[in-house]
Length: 245
Length: 342
Image 1 (cartoon, one colour):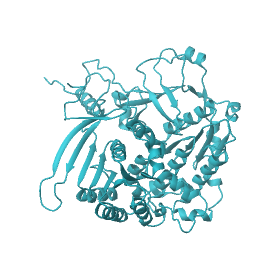
Image 2 (image 1 turned 90 degrees about the vertical axis):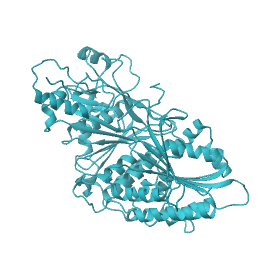
Image 3 (image 1 turned 135 degrees about the vertical axis):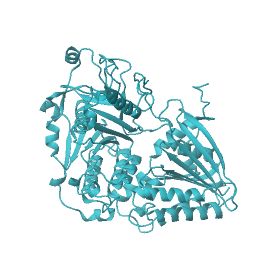
Image 4 (image 1 turned 60 degrees about the vertical axis):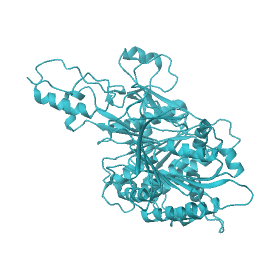
């Protein structure tokens, strides 16, 4: 409860982690607000079906609040005039991320009719906000407000995906990622293998658990390698891939 | 969304662009061509002619060839292409389910060209700025292009908005040299462009349009001119598939014996991962292309056999250096690891 998890990927695609968390929290019965900026609803829906979760049904029942960034953007740009009382959550294309935060807050606010377990905010992915013109400070503010409202006030969890890389020249992105790293309780870092592409081992995942944000205790670091299959991901200790044994 | 990084002189990426459009014509798809550099009608006049199966087999014999394949997914509404690497065959099979071959030395017959609906967007012929687009905060050339694409998609019913239409067709969009100065964007000129977000916003909205409709898009970008690498990284994240073409013209690699059979390298930087957890990873990532008189082929890069002892040490070391650049999985003769010096 009340945890902030950062999903980070470098030189590879960490979106399988997003799919995992989405189906994990939905199966656990939590109310999920999913801000999906990069892919369409049907993409997540099809993968979730393979993982055993029906997104459309969850949306019907109100367990899942899905913001499809691509669609909202089109509606905003090509659609008819907005009604004054309903600003689009992606209004930030011209101003700051406040509207997006309001959307998140309203969608996760506790309502009496249904009794879902703790609220969860899932964002895929944050780096897109920078591409769309938001400043790094605005993005960090948005995450801060979300943390306060979801983790502290509502005792929920926040999971965010960002892209990064060591020799990246995108300074704004690195700024956001580094700042988020310092504030996270758990970091799942998917990296491509340093030796290059391999068919049997798709990458390496580093799990960094913050034991305490206040005291200077050592973080717990674990490293596994993984291989992604059609319906699941297998993890194994480095060097012990099934192809090697 | 297929994103192609242009090679230095734009020769080969242009060729790939034309192949995409020609394939569209042969498959009966509608086309939308946008350019700021040359008039789309001129581009369309120069598409390569398709080869019929029997003539092709007669002419080509058993040279290595590539099959460009297309895959459609109704639910996802985006088509992407991936290459079947020729580990199975060295000559094209008689029954090819997907894709067609083209003869570059001949032009596509105009009747074939006219058989599909073509829409074009030539930046310099477009009307100027509409007031509604001010809210978008984007380069006006891009904004107009997006409006044009959206209008075609909704008018022609590619987004399923017209239930009357029984026959659903695919729209192939080709955008040439996006990001170049001709579009009014200074991304290629300076390190700190005036509006660094224009290109990425454009791609995001384009991605939305593609996801919403039955269309596929190829974009070529002169990425070697883009100074600000951060923008290229963001653009890569926003695209489904990223392919870079590096030609050997004018570079030191032209004379490198390692590459003597080829005209350039193909870097597949990203493959689409749509509708599933995994993507179609191929065995090898080292691809090179060559332009023969009639055919443009992409094949696995293989090192020429190291035949003679008289190869001087200097060139051997060059080869070693280049071989290190090849990632693992290359089907190479074992080279470049150690040279036994006696």
